[in-house]
Length: 225
Image (tube, rainbow, N blue to C red; front, side):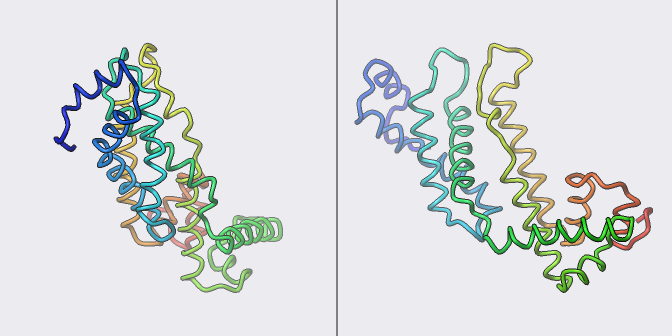
């Protein structure tokens, strides 16, 4: 963080008199936090949105955090602001409908093909059956599956994540929530480094909740593998 200003003194002054000048100093001081949060989300979205765009959305969250920060609660501002920044970015991403229309159309086509084939053949369709039904090759099939998985991650409703109620012992503190978010981020990053086939296997097991037998039919592998 920047050391140009005495941040504690600035906060004390801001508590007494919330002037525009003091708010701008706080925004400037915490701007690097916006870059950090936006950069983490950018790992998954860099094919669709520029980092500068994500940071612009994040600044909205930072300003909101400065306006709503409760000095009486034992929560570090950086922790509180990180959640607000992330929330603001995800809110804007949902608003702009970042997934290309062509991808959404392909996703719908795949889902409809799965329903048709299952109704026709009496079993969950294999990958080969779906590709033949849609007349697409393996590369395009995996691309659609990957896009669907990423879209699912971003589309999850995380509203409750940003409601901070530290008095309730059964409610995770912002620090605990942030730690959980970081663990999920690292897990997501590890998943993205897997092969497309391995990513699809994880999606089918955890997102689609297929059994190992059903997955083996889809991927045409033995259950033991």
